[in-house]
Amino acid sequence: MSMRKVIIETQVQNQLAELKNYLIDSQGEKKGKKTFSEIIASIDNLGTFGSIGSNLRERFDIDCPNNWYLLYSHMNYFVFSRTETLVTVLKMYDNRQDFIFDLFGIEMRSQESKDYWGE
Image 1 (tube, helix red, strand yellow):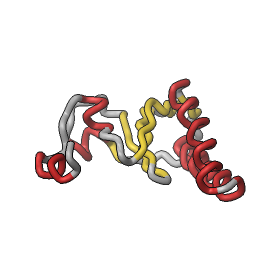
Image 2 (tube, one colour):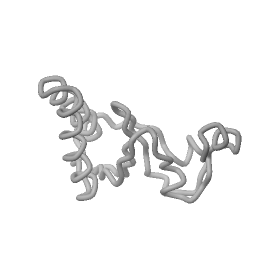
Image 3 (cartoon, one colour):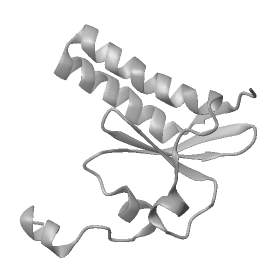
């Protein structure tokens, strides 16, 4: 099994640092650090296991690079690109954010949903 190098973009590194602090504050030090280490392990696994993640183009039928994928871990989405030798974590979103709209300007939510949530 070949390993890919995993690179995490600076913006995502900063978001992960904020997430770690949030988890420790909200869950306590032991549980927060455990949850954070599980998230980091999920990201690290991208370099080891080539089939992790959903292809964004196929899953959402959108026009984007064919090597862009989505990983969901502990209520967070990670958008990453994958080649034969490299995985680059490009963006991080929590599960309340509309990452498809942010990345591609495509509205995925219905008007009924917006009305329900008062948006």
